[in-house]
Image (cartoon, rainbow, N blue to C red):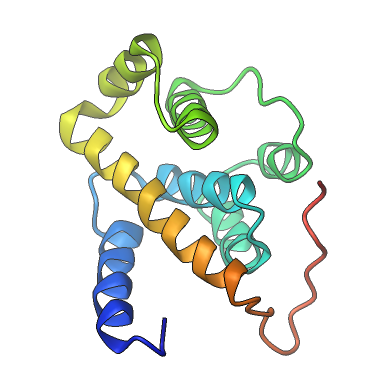
Length: 147
């Protein structure tokens, strides 16, 4: 995106806002970013956000199960709302009314718009990183995400 400065400027500003200034808690934002990175098999985003996700309180089990594509069960209501909404949207480009209603009840209209926008923004970033085969920064040791 650095080769298209206007795209980079606008995209990074949106990403910065969604990453830090929304009504969603830091835990929910990081979960959304990891969920999107995993759904798009984006090692760069995964490695950037997994340590932050742990630091803001997401459990090792949740992060490891997400990484390994293990079913995510027995989650608190807020995490379940993000996971259910994100997985359904990322896999089918739509959400059922029940999933929509659960996320809406959990986060309100503003929070749901922010959640949806965060998924979309990180999908855009992941697709750019993957298409241009952006490698992990020097000194970073990240393994490929399991298929």
